[in-house]
Length: 186
Length: 360
Ligand code: HEM
Ligand code: SF4
Ligand code: SF4
Image 1 (cartoon, rainbow over the protein chains, first blue to last red):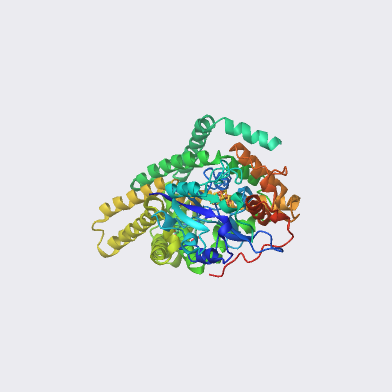
Image 2: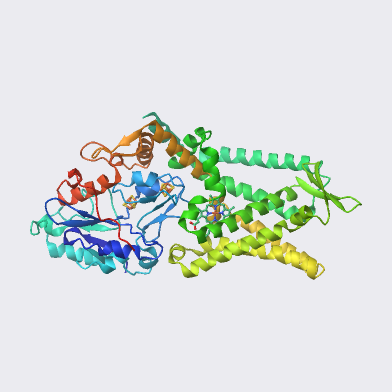
């Protein structure tokens, strides 16, 4: 059963376990490729994670002159191939969410590859494996559908893509509590 | 705007149009050039080494595959842009230095790790040196004649370049050049294979055809090459003809495979020099300021080019504030997304992003 990464942003408690876990994934060379943001840093403590959403039509790959960013058959948009990336940084400019990171010294881009050596075998990515607050989950489409029923939102208020994102993505994003008005920002 | 129009037009006339003519032209020119060079080099084909005939055919098939791939690739909008603008900037003062660092000494791979650098120097330079020796021999650009007095003449392009004693250092180095490079390649490939056992990165993205095949082919070429020498010296040539065929076969397969697999980076890599020039030149021309925080984060030119290239792919990221998302610096773009989720304008809070790097 194909599973996908599903984010329930409002659950985030800012522990940054996902960042730490990311550093430990095979091939990440102890550098994390995801982000956690304070929503309103001077006022409250609500945080939200941000990572590559693995777009169905990825701007990063479309803008790469070297074809260094490959799309895996699972839909994951991979990190730059080490022998192909020529270091132009087009991808960092193209990504609508500012995800790809660039290493000047090594002249290479690196980004979330959805822990492809894990997820291609159905094992959840590192970040979802460790998230203690159920912000990052690894679910089948059916399970995501069930959540939709459970939250019983008005039509159009179930956001997994537009208008909150720029296009269809393989990772699904949601913030049901905030949309329902039953959770407030901490 | 002009650039955008140009890009649009070009992508309109698809691969095929430009393709047939470009491909045929490049192919014709290269084969002609090879033939002329060989004609001169062999003094009107009087010194052709027929043992090497298979290589000649292999090389010509390789050139076909190479142009096929290269032209299809060069037609992609982002590739075309960097190639076009990069070639115009080829004569920057920094070009020689960048070229050496990117293409010869691989400083950036050093920064990825000394192991990876050593491995690549062994494989890369082993192969490059082998080619420097092999190709001139195959196409008759260089050959040896022997005088009666125990001296070899090295003939390049039909002219005597050097006469060296048959037992001297230079002569020995040239007999053994391919043995030395073979040992370099074998050592490098073994390092690469060992890394696949030990390091998960090398493992994560590997597919047999893409990742292992080129390594095994390089190994096969080098080992059969060494075996040839071994048979010549220790077995008085026993088994040599068969091994020679296997060796030839492995080289030809490697050449034909080259444009399509991992080794395709060899002809494509010089683009990294173009890309560096492009970034440096246009950064001097003027930097783009982030629409939110004002930080200069990329050259105006590149920002525009990326927006155009995305446009060709019918991707248009307009923020509701009116600008393109590519006009925001990366941290602001990320905060802008958070703002879309939460409804609170995170990107407008003047606080630098913090705590984003976990120490592994
Ligand atoms: C034009 C100069 C060249 C450049 C700039 C270049 C660049 C690179 C880079 C950046 C990598 C990735 C290394 C890493 O991050 O570990 C690589 C890998 C590799 N290169 Fe080159 N290369 C060049 C020439 C060659 C040549 C002539 C060969 C000979 C066949 C070669 C064979 C390989 C192989 C086999 C790998 C894969 C290593 C592995 O899978 O672990 N390269 N190259
Ligand atoms: S979110 Fe950015 S980095 Fe990830 S696939 Fe989409 S464009 Fe590429
Ligand atoms: S930086 Fe590397 S991966 Fe990104 S667009 Fe340029 S070549 Fe492609």
